[in-house]
Length: 210
Image (cartoon, rainbow, N blue to C red):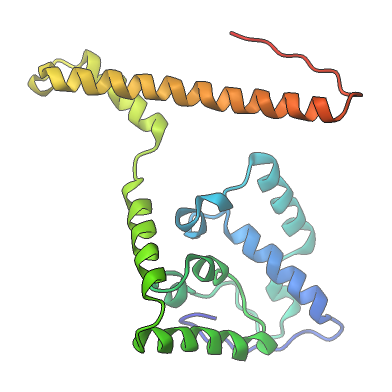
């Protein structure tokens, strides 16, 4: 699906349910690669290390989807949907997958109906919200830890730019914010741990502060 239209036929004995599960696993596995834009579009889709390990394990056990197809193709482009800013973010992230033949007609209709409604002046309020969200995401180009590292270096730099008072003030604020963010993360983890323990009295809680 996407820019590429790939004819294929399913191997005998492979059920629709099995194919749907293979599609789901392959899409989840693809999101772990550098080629996926899903987590950039929606940071909530990021997985923990444990979850990523589980996805890789399940994918290794099931094998790639193309093993069940008579016309073999290891990959296809989806950018015609995933990179189209006017589509809802959920649709763009969901498009990073193989669309099975019996699902394609309904999916194409949904995309085309949405575009037709926009041409007729529909979804204006939603599009404004989408525009703001996407631009806010674009502005988040610097990771907190990278920013803290730059701030630390600026405090000991000897260049003329580093001697300006506002640079020092800004650097200190960034470092204070970084420390506050790390403390906030630690507190959230501690609260979560205490919450689990309070729900299950069989668990023994140990906490330490530094």
